[in-house]
Length: 197
Figure (tube, one colour):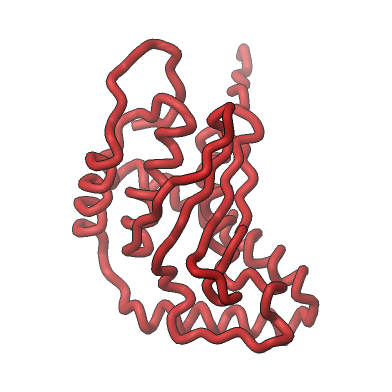
């Protein structure tokens, strides 16, 4: 299974089907204790804040760490998810929201706020597992994107599939927003290069 875009008219997989694929993929995954994951991630963010002391640099480092994870995680996703080929960026966003997040974090997201060109949307995550038991101090509110690792993972996975994207937090429940929202924008479909040798 390889996620790519086809110009031919093919039947589109509906969001309900993606939700079912996400549930099936989640049921097949080895589980990690969520409390252990949350506390370990919290320790990582705390240590980065102590070591780097610059909130913007911590945000960058979390995204970079996630990107490196995403470069490798996509192989497991493709091997275990059972997702059919995506037809366009809309399908890709639905797969991320309903299958990828469900498979690896146990949550699903809603895809909303598409631009006219269908190259940018937002993922609304009602329950971010990384932010359980977390309360940001006032000096970090609206500055630290605590779960920025997720944006990096998405960017890394999609880059391995020849899609250059920008992925960033728009809203975060830890900053007092009603829900967590990530903006995803397709920047380029990278042409594959082959050597003639």
